[in-house]
Image (cartoon, rainbow, N blue to C red; front, side):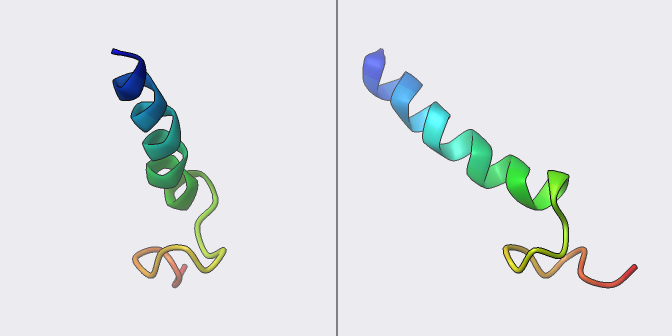
Length: 33
């Protein structure tokens, strides 16, 4: 269970970063306004 929590803690920021901060070079879906 601890491993799952660790993976979730690593994966969540990677998934949410392009959504919260579009256009920072991490994702190409939201580069154009």
